[in-house]
Image (cartoon, rainbow, N blue to C red):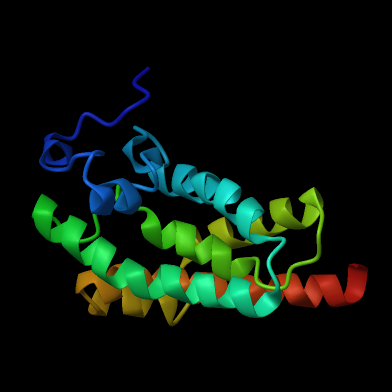
Length: 164
């Protein structure tokens, strides 16, 4: 069983390049299977570092991850010569950070947020699927995960309202 992808296009990227390192979700996007899930898992330590911050700081850094992601994903995609290659998972990192905005503390809420984000990212309900197909470049790579994060955020907040 292969742990890392053997896709030859990945040879065009280097983990020594900070843009590529981030685009590949700190290397998690190199997983042979389910790189999006591994990219979302790689976001958890970043979330745990950011979670103690005040809400304005958390939101500001999350927005920074989104806006920087437009460039990061676009650059990596162009360097690979492939639009939205599965190994580019910075969008998943940003998506989980969006999901967890103002989430209640506790590992249970992180697990629920993770599951909700993966659900919406994989299912891609309208308009996520439409945007994923029609919008290109770094913005196009990011926008479906941003929306999946927003959908997940709304569901998580609804659950928290009733159960937290």
